[in-house]
Length: 288
Image (cartoon, rainbow, N blue to C red):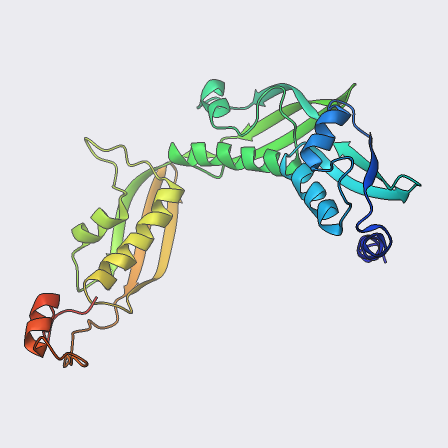
């Protein structure tokens, strides 16, 4: 029943109050944001005709700001028209931010990429996004097994302190990258597409999870661009031993495709051979 109530309520509102002017707009539940600002963002305007679309847009506009964890619109009726009441529950404001456990990467570097700072409104979604940014930063620096725990301490005035406790996992360097069942292209060619390299005299051998994911997609696209349309990475495995990482990618190349007979239809002014010449296609060429 809880999920049906808002829909039924809006249908009743739409039936009884549509086309009546908005006589009064009030706001309740706000602690740090002014009623005037909330009304402005909602889009409701005194004197305008009330509609169901206005209610939907008001809720959407307010949620979009990221300042609220809950928004409700209640309505009533008076002799002058529709009474609108916007009830909000604000997200807390970040009063202080602490990092614990980050010994390998400086706090300033981690803060730089966070989607929030002191004074920001904190939602579960934005905190989660911040945690992912921290993990990504560590991955870019060659760390795996990183975890981040969050702790919120409630303060007066709907403000909070946030502590980010980091387990930095372990730093690894790529010891080897091996390809299996690759006959069409050399290991050197495929490593170039992957974009990661083993640790060496002039190379750090850092492992970046996002770069690895993108690199695998580039390898498959490289095959397709050269006529191996069914090629894919059948399996990839990552092993670690201490600070050393070993990567193995198993290829399933399929077969290489070539153009068969090329026919041109509908041409009256220009000959078929001329059109094929202009298009640069010939029978037997690699299809990609």
